[in-house]
Length: 162
Figure 1 (cartoon, rainbow, N blue to C red):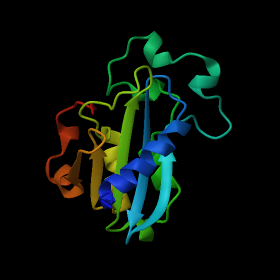
Figure 2: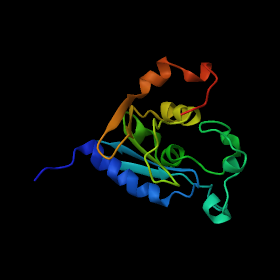
Figure 3: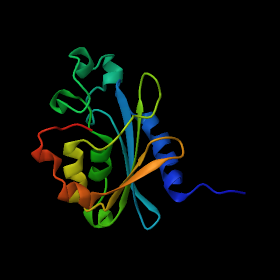
Figure 4: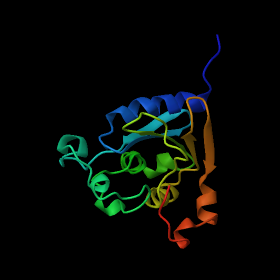
């Protein structure tokens, strides 16, 4: 019997979690893992107690034709990465890994060149997470060393894209 490698194992779990997402554009899920133990999970959705876009039946960013990776201040959702970080203790996140999966809501396709947005990158850096593993296809993924985000500060370029 051939076993699934550990990175795809955690990415598969994240992919199940993203089904809880309520964004009408793109759904993401994040899992924080340390020492082969899941510390916390998160998915995209409105703050607790507020209505989700899926409940309202519209996305303000879609209505305004806002390009991907911009104008997050008008998005109702808390990002998956943020929700996972909020649910964990910092001491548990130090040197941990975050697994990230994103899918287009309308097509179900994996998000091309998925990455954390600039705000989520700041959350991840401050949380102490060491690496982020991003799913590209069912079997392929990228491993990002968070130190690269520190050394190559994209916030100086002025684009918030992902």
